[in-house]
Length: 264
Image (cartoon, helix red, strand yellow):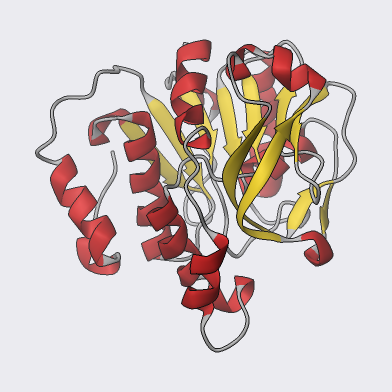
């Protein structure tokens, strides 16, 4: 279950947490396990709220484990959830090794082998690529911070997740790393000019990754990037710079809900 500390969050996020406690019961009974890689408590809580909002979940339906602070869950623990999500990581890179790396690779592969629904977001997307046999590189020359146009590949246009999707749509991005070598079992569903693997799927499996942040609204994106402004922005007015780079992302906003519908 999610634990909240509104004082540790921005005012808008704290208001969202407060309103969630009085909202109508969730229309979904799914149990979701969110695996987090966070070294900032504010970012950890912010990410939890973003997924709660996007998935329309009641807080008790979302179990959160921050693998920076807690052991990677066992396979039995992960199988108790209907869906496993591996979120982002402001201060960690998927191409580097940490104490959680090997056990998390093992868990991801066990879930893939068992056809369990899995979604990787940003770091989680990159980590999925590494776990199933690909590689991840640090590529600041092609970083994407802000809102960018994502284009479906031919395979993406045929994938059930993108049924009825426009060929191009806007999405929020914030990354310096990207999937580099793509294993044969990983299908690229969408790309941008700077990053070829924007959405991937393990072939024939309910296992997806998105480099972009479909869990975040435009306001959430402002809040999150400013938590890591020194890493992602330069100059004297990072908030002003970021505001110029962001715009609404109506199609991407619904991607997680469509994922849940497709895999459950």
